[in-house]
Length: 68
Image 1 (cartoon, rainbow, N blue to C red):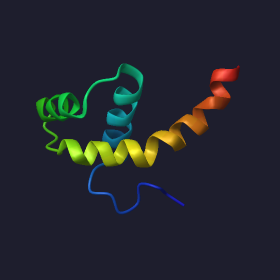
Image 2: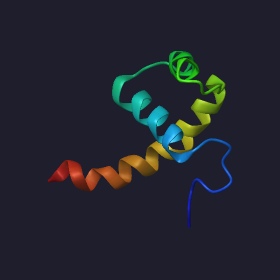
Image 3: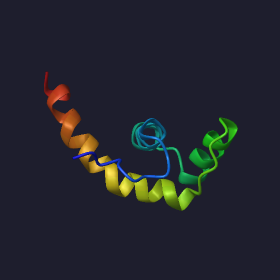
């Protein structure tokens, strides 16, 4: 099952925003500005929802790589 099916934004945009939030601690509003500079208009509350939805799954999948 594709967790990105039916999303308004492309998978790469969602993963980029979640990764930068988790790795660098950038605020949702700063991420909103960074995406806007790249031509992607997204609200900070949408980024918040992406982090809540996808960050735990990303951590679970990456944990295996961190061990090695």
